Image 1 (cartoon, helix red, strand yellow):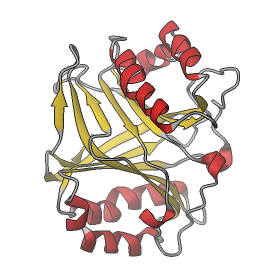
Image 2 (cartoon, one colour; image 1 turned 90 degrees about the vertical axis):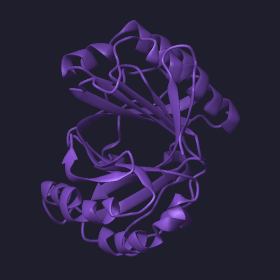
Image 3 (spheres, helix red, strand yellow; image 1 turned 45 degrees about the vertical axis):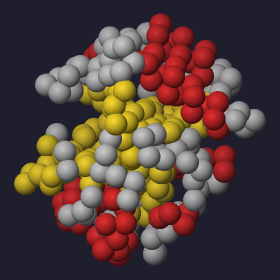
Length: 268
């Protein structure tokens, strides 16, 4: 189960989350793949026992990178590695993945129908943090997801400590967010998600080590945030630790399982 801790304001809930980065097939229209993922493929994952939440993050097709250019860091998203979507799967417990082996086998077989590349980034239990920045009734009108790559020579523990103790709280204290989730990743391993007939190429210099999901009231608020002084200050703090910051425009965030229950229809 998730745990919570008080860090003054806001409160933080810790979860056990995995994220699967997805690239749809290119031998058919992109929207065909996105619709199949939203429809038939979602039913396979949503039926998995032991899930606390299952959310699909649909990324905009045009995504050059929202993070402002920063000296010494890659902020422009390379076209050949641009992600189409992210499956955000949060488990009820550390043992929950074992309950879902039957559905996972079905997902393995179905992936080739829609995806050309899939990469699973897993975190340790309680390494995913959801910040209560606006309350459950807050309306999120626009979102972004940020992927961070640790700079060579920076220790993993030092990087995680910065994400958990400085970046997350610093973003929460900006006062403009309606949603904030951070996730730090364990070292990537193809064996964790080695689906047949789908690519899993992930060179060392292309791997990620953390992600951040930001929710805003409006797209205008989001765009203003990325040109604000808090982001400029965060860039300076991140420069010694991160070699890449890829900030994606999220087109839709669709929830299929919520509070441990599959929904009859997805929620946006």
